[in-house]
Length: 111
Length: 112
Image (cartoon, helix red, strand yellow):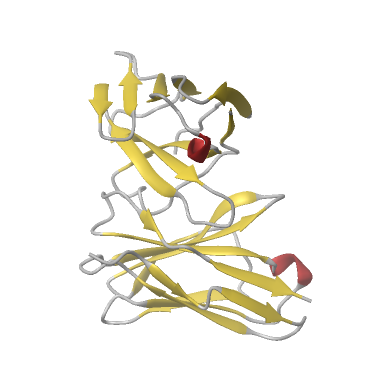
């Protein structure tokens, strides 16, 4: 499974857009990119998943360049409740059920 | 549709005891995976069950075991508890191996 690298922490303010970039230089052809959000003492919550280009849902957008060696999670107009740890993972068929989590990015949103 | 449920939510045990944690997946999900989360090691994969068979196993000692029932519910057992087993134990389910995993709220285990 491809290893991911993302910033350890980020700070933002309410109402701003936050972009968290993840590097996955060894991503395989059949790997998907998935982002999870985790609040303290809770299970990770699925945010978004993509293979290439751009994916958008009601919570976030995921931008994936053509070479797929990185991806950017975009959170529009963050609020205090978006303070959490965000994990970027890559996994392929047969690997989704054996996720390898990195340290994640600890996002702190300030008033 | 109800999410993944885990019981109990909190548990206190003493060293040497054993513990059994339960996970009920989302209806229709047949794959159940277990993870351990500690401040020092982060989120680590324990094992995965699909159709009552263990298909993947992480790098944990044999004291950690699990099983899955015909209704896809799963249990994990930890025998001879050690202080280092104190952690948040998370269960996740998916429809097939290829699908997104959805996590439960976790069971917080404290070993004294």
